[in-house]
Image (cartoon, one colour):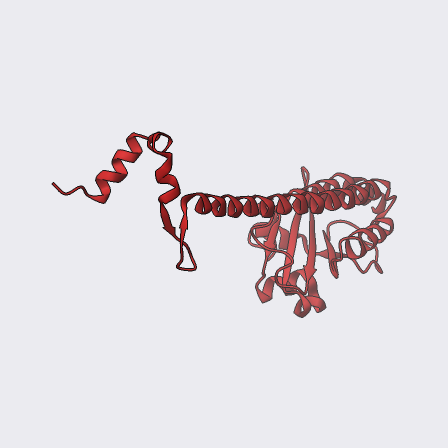
Length: 226
């Protein structure tokens, strides 16, 4: 009667203490390695263990780096939100966006697009009016408003032009936040020349916080402007 490899494997699976009862066999077993040389079971297990440790170290390093990045983002977002709450008017708001987003977050192109139903003073380069109908159903920016969640990634040429105007050709990736709080105030558009800077699969937690803070303070600032 011939014993097959499958039968041996099944027997060992059913008798996991087999090598404990026959330790001399462990020393005799030889297993193939990646180099092609046969190695002992003990050495094989040691190599597997070292590989597992290296993988755990990589995962640990990744977790530490992610925590570091999140800590930096949290502090920048906190500083931005506190500065937004201190803004007294739209001119102050434009300064905050320039200092905290353009410089602090290293985002070259920032646009706060507010509905033209509000009185938007001239001369604020980061704050510009857009037609109110463009934000409503059927308007060219309506989808971003209706999505509520930040829109992140690459944009069509038409959408880039609508959001960034003369700077549209420099934008390769963007994040767009709808500013809605019982009323549609407009959009915050962030543009970057690096196609990988804003990616559709990235977490939006900090962007959500920024959008919520802006929507919270805009009614007060717009009331003053009007």
